[in-house]
Amino acid sequence: MPAGGLTITANVLNTIQHPVIMVDKNGFIAYANWAAETFFGVSADMLLRHTIDQYIPFGSPLLSLIDHVRERSGPINEYKVDLSSPKLGTDKLVDLYVAPVAGDADHDDAVVVVFQIRTMADKIDRQLTHRAAARSVTGLASMLAHEIKNPLSGIRGAAQLLESSVNDEDRALTQLIRDETDRIVSLVDRMEVFSDERPVDRQPVNIHSVLDHVKAVARAGFARDVRIAESYDPSLPYVFANRDQLVQVFLNLVKNACEAIGDAPDGEIQLTTAFRPGIRLSVPGSREKVSLPLEFCVHDNGPGVPDDLLPHLFDPFITTKTNGSGLGLALVAKIVGAHGGIVECERQSRRTTFRILMPMSKETDFWPDDGTAKSR
Image (cartoon, rainbow, N blue to C red):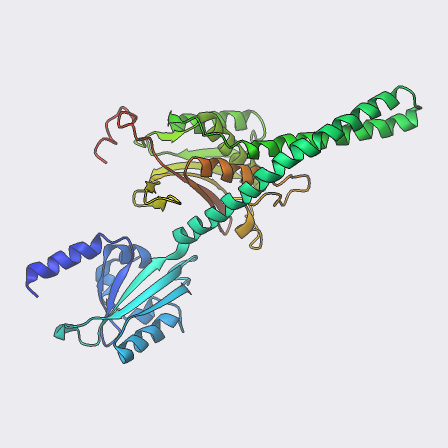
């Protein structure tokens, strides 16, 4: 192939967001695109000095896949292969596509390996599950509103009438009936939010004004003893959203983070924003794909979410709190989903991150006035 052809091939591979490497017949890495540099955490020059087995866990299925591809001279797909290691880091679950390099005498017995990182695909799959769970709560909320609130009103009224004609000891029981009835009504009222299927009234919103408002509310109340830091991208375009609902989402997330930190003296919550191009979500029932370039995160250094709870965190009635209803994060998932976005939780040692990806406003005028974002 002419030298110009090799340059074009390298340029094309560098535009691919999936890590791509070529392994020669001796096991050395003969090529790595830019995404592979990020995946392995070293430069391409460094990768090309070593064999593949020096970068992946001992006994990894990838090594046997490479040998098998050479033997059969045909491509192989392998799904959900865990490459996590101290060198590569945690959460390295990937799909692998391994294929022989055909028709190239200079690379006899070489194979190409494409890594498709599972994280985002799994996030979207889980998000669809969260939305289905929210829809199930919608039906339940409608039923509860009609079938429970009316008889509860009668029970409370009867207890109130009895209260004036009983002694002090029994009056405590009637007060208990009233309090518990009010508590159930309050729970039903919270669930009725899920039954609201009206289109969201949206407009371009500056996410930083939302986060600053949330931070002010938190510092004046439940987070007065917790440090709240921020790391914002000042050139971020506006998000196409309902401002009040975004405030509700981030108040829930910041309050959860504060409760997770508890009384820890070094407790800290960090709010971050960033522009992440390249993430697109298919819209069910159409060929349209929605771009989700806006990333908003709430980080905390609390003990984290238990492993068994993490896959179900946004399902209704799932909670670790003694008196929690388990509806806060389910409501977050519903609101973000109604805006066409996704929300996910990631946990590492002493660091929990709630990440929201959302579409930006289609109005080109709604960028910061400093001009830094115009060139995106």
